[in-house]
Length: 346
Image (cartoon, rainbow, N blue to C red; front, side, top):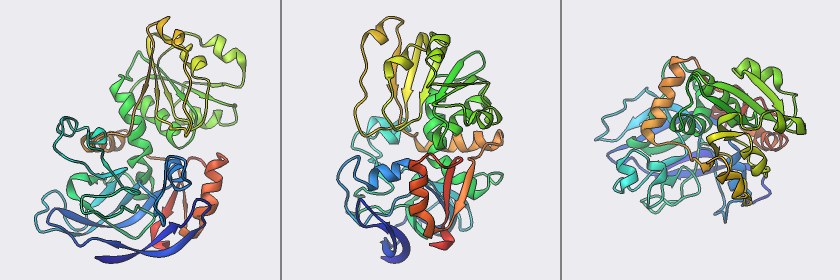
């Protein structure tokens, strides 16, 4: 075991404190990564505050990790010391089930191993990226292209792949009309990626206060959902709607915006159930679906796509002693559009 510095929360109420955690000694296929930057995801807050289930404290969150390989195990073939790499929301899976064999490790039938808050195959409680170093098996590490700055790359490991995967799966492309619900950490990436895929992109936000941002990010249209006329005007318009908000919304109202055979896919994960009236689905053969991150192969594909199209997250870099402040600002939607921790300050 190797002890490294980290910032952990010790209860639902916080605050974050400097601590040390143990990382395992390198196994033959392990990679030791010096973490340079870690993004702050709303999922960190949901998890740490017990909104998604019981938590084993202390907890070190963080699953948007960008860094440099500093050491490799004896049988590692994919990476070398000095490589620019990333780690996302999972650090292992069974590797044997049908979904893992398809490259969809996020849907491992035995359950993937989360980057934090999970028990790994060695019986250790996983701790995330709000730390200086992490040890991960090479199969769950991805390569960050040289053209993407490490700080702006970090959020791609969750926000990027979480939106890329459904856009790719449901065929965002020229001739398709895509709506993005919410313009936050996930939403701004969905707009950039859908635009790069060639779709006609519309942002559906509570107000018009971020309209200028949305259009600059690549949206063709921007509407306020607080205006009842929006739902009348856009009824039956979209082939795909990506809902990025982690809060209660009127699903039936958004389903009414879908064209024939359209799909509303949820990537935001509110703590409480969402209600849906079946008649909102059957009238126009509409679908209500969900999507969770992406497999390792698709995550690498997303990074390469972002490099090709000059896409990165819009970020605000903070020091580790500002994590509590950043969390409160995330809850207040006061960030454009992703906080990233400079892990040299941990």
